[in-house]
Every structure is written in structure tokens, then in C-alpha cells.
Image 1 (cartoon, rainbow, N blue to C red):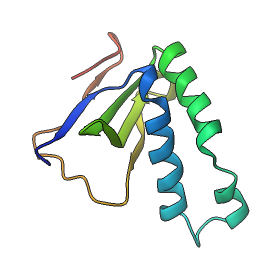
Image 2 (image 1 turned 180 degrees about the vertical axis):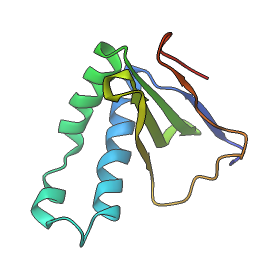
Image 3 (image 1 turned 90 degrees about the vertical axis):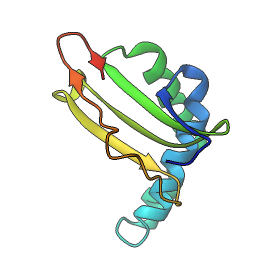
Image 4 (image 1 turned 120 degrees about the vertical axis):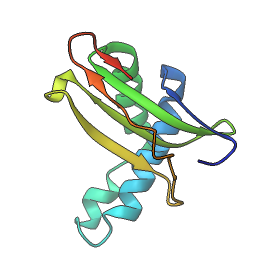
Length: 114
């Protein structure tokens, strides 16, 4: 892990940073695999609204961010609303090397991530 990187629970103020990573990763990851018009339809503004709503209004969803010196460079989300599964792992183009011991465990009974 980079020395300035912090893995922490996301909050509504992180919505724009998460949206940027989400949209940018779609543009770099799926280019050539998904039609360009679908990729182009992904916007920061739209994703920011979705993430703001998710972070503020969906307690069954957990979201953690990789925060590098105040910049969101990756995120992970999941929760009971999708059968207790991890359903998104997104990062900026540069790799994020998490230490081997960093794992997320989700407890559906308490909605806790450990």
C-alpha cells in the first residue's frame, strides 16, 4: 500500500470522487468491449447523484474508499441489497496494491464490514 493511502468508510462528501473513479474506470476498462455510446453516456454528474443517494440513503450498502492524500483513487461497495455480495471494485488506472491481510468481511445480520 502506498504510504499516503488510507482505506476508510465512504461518506456523502466522497460522492464526486467516487463518481470520477467510477466513470474513468469505465472509460479505460470497457473501451472496445462495450459500444462507445454507452461508455460516453457515463457522466460524473449522473454518477455523483447516484453515489450521493447511495451513501446517504442506503444503509444496506457499504462503500469503502482508497484515499490518497485527499483524493479518492479507488472504491469498493457491496451489501445486503445484492445478496450480501461485493459488487463493485473500481480504481484509477494506476494499480492499488492492498496488503495481503486487507480483506473485507460482510456480516448480513449486523450490516457490518470488518
